[in-house]
Amino acid sequence: MVDDGPTPRQEIRFCRSADGVQIAYAVHGHGPPLLVDSCWLSHLQHDWVSPVWRHYLHEWGRYRTVIRFDERGHGLSDRGVQDHSLELRLADLEAVVEDAGHERFDLLAMAQGGPVAIAYAAAHPERVSRLAFYGSYSGQQDKDATESELNDTLDALIKVGWARPDSGFRRVFTSLMIPNATEEQHTWLDELQRVSTDADTARSSRRQRLSADSSHLLDSLDVPTLVIHSRGDRMNDFSEARYLASHIDGARLVCLESDNHIVLEDEPAWSVFRAELRRFLNEPIRGDGVPAPAPSDGASLEALSAREREILSLAARGLDNEEIAAQLVLSTRTVERHLSNVYAKLDLHGKSARTAAVARLLTAT
Image (cartoon, rainbow, N blue to C red; front, side):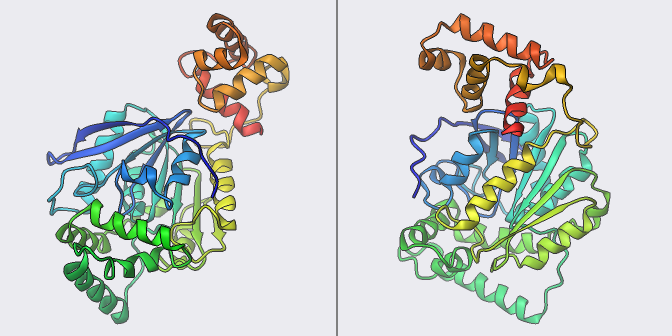
């Protein structure tokens, strides 16, 4: 397994949704904002030590300011919540967006976050720069009798086994999510289920998610869209991804050769996932969502000196000016001067100049 180094610093914040439920969200990384619409099970602190999730957090934080939250009733958000309707989950997302304070951002819908992300993008098109789905769905698929019986069985397993000290019952869900995992990864996901929420919340939230449906809004979306899905996903069938991509104008579908709902760091599909998502998020766009034209010669990265490009590369890795100065044995004032020159050569201005310069560099590499 790749050593990602020390855990990056994350800031945990709290906001209140429309019905007063307190939602916990965390911010880490550097770069343009990426808001992650939560999947079913999460814990803002627990995920950082996870052999299942931590490679995602490290990867995204390298080139994005990542905003992620625990859904109502889960993780560090208020527990004991019974209403998990699509309307209130949308309100939770809206509350996080407003509290985080970003006017525009990229939105990544994870698994069950799909219907909420679709509803948000349809209601607030001016806020979403790009929309990505990972292992997700819109809620449109008709469930046959066999599927209904399976859901009844899974509900029964949650009721009798979720809180048990041994993980036998929870392992059923783990095996559906990451069938090709190691024992360490299986054990961790078993434990995440227990610490992320209680059995009653797990059952009620899961049942209410099954009825969430935003498929009627897909045709109205006008935003650059990427759909990524594992071919052998046992939690959300690959047909869900095909439906999303075929009903959102201009959407691109990426099929991962994996049976895991959560692609693991040591499988080939992870390299595909990280490259495709990074490429998509770094594609330049204008404010109207149309791909931006290439910069003019006067605003090209080729105009930067070797030192200016070196400093910009360190900024893209998340280092602040003092850290860059220490690494290059320069004064902070010298680093600031070089960056000012970078912004001038790239024709960038204002508070977003650093973010835009970093995005320009990442897009070109």
